[in-house]
Structures are given as C-alpha cells and as structure tokens.
Amino acid sequence: MKPQSAKAKGRNLQKWVRDLILESFPQLEPDDVRSTSMGCGGEDLQLSPAARKLFSFSVECKNTEKLNVWNAYEQASANSGDYEPLLVMKKNRKKPLVVLDAETFVNLIKKL
Figure 1 (cartoon, rainbow, N blue to C red):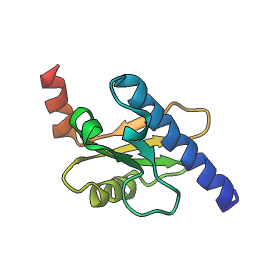
Figure 2: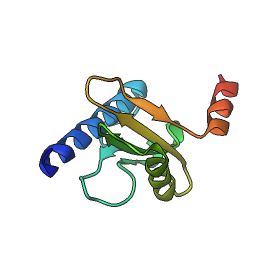
Figure 3: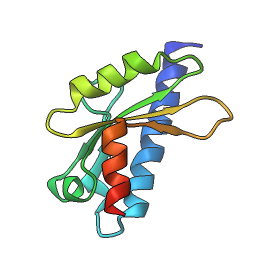
C-alpha cells in the first residue's frame, strides 16, 4: 500500500471516531473535537476543554491490517498526558475495536 493510501485510511478512522464522539455528545460543537493531520505528533484527536469534561480520553487511531497492539498502546500512553490513553484500531471489513486499560474499564462500568 502506498503511504498516501495508508494515511488516508488512518485519516478516515480519525474522522469516524470524531463523528462518533460528536454524535454521542450533542451538546458539543463540531470544532470541539478535531482530527489532527497525519504525521503530526501527539494525540490523533484534539479535544476542547468542553469535550474533555465529557470525554476524558486521549485517542490514538490505527487503521491497519497488522498491528502490534502493545506498541500502539504504548504510543497512545506516551501521547496521553493527564488523560487516559484509548487505542481505536480497525482493519479492512472489520468493526473498529477499542483497547483500554483494564482498571479504567472496570471503573467505567462501576459508574454505570
């Protein structure tokens, strides 16, 4: 796959996650969640303070057929700052999946 095509796949996943967050929190404005450009360091989605209050995760998106999940999660952790790292991964013809720290997951379930 050409690098340009790979970047387009990644960008499409970032936009999908951005749209999902915006649909899930209708009180947010479209510019509260922005997809960063490919090759830009840091988080894949930039969230405004209003978005952070509702969605306190640092998102890393990976749209690839072969993925070292541990390395991808380490990248998400390195970019997360004060927020919980969240890895969103996808491959062709499969639904996107999320990788989240187990303790964080259990704490989320307890809040329900």
